[in-house]
Length: 226
Image 1: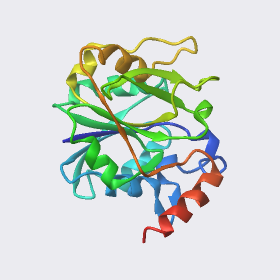
Image 2: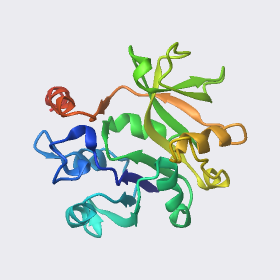
Image 3: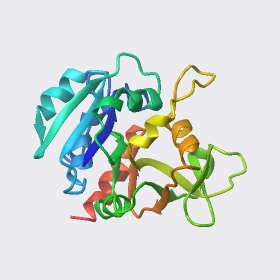
Image 4: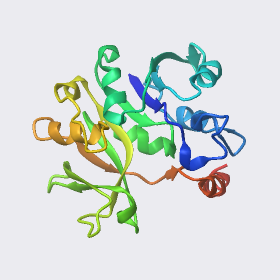
């Protein structure tokens, strides 16, 4: 199984830590964020497709052609035109079902294992501040109904955490350009779920790394797991 990891962004919210270091290599609990992410992947994942851009030579040097026993293929994103654009760049490399995620957050190993037990799925986390996140609304059968970005009046408290199990059918739906000029994967997924249902899997561990203070929060949680 392949895993697409988006690692091209500049990590501006993490500055000054990312001024000379790409976000995936920022240190968390003594090792790069990317190490935490990949070591939690299911054993069935045998190939990584890493989308790189900002300071990509550092990521390539860190991971090489094989990283934690997994073959690595790199895809260069010249301009950060959005998640949908990054995903679309991987289109010709995808062989079947695949994991799709960001090089931003740490997820529970068991949560990722449960996600891939479904044909198509996404991870979601119950939050008390849904106005800060992209929210997923479930259908009565537990599948994805719709996405609502940072709602003022939230129709759900389930935040999308950016982990999806997809397959080649997702590329039947080209990303559409938003008013800011970017293309997002949520538009592709929203268009696909009527024909190709996607399970919503609630996760137990989600450590988003968006700001410098998030690193200390994550380290405190990780320390309790050792």
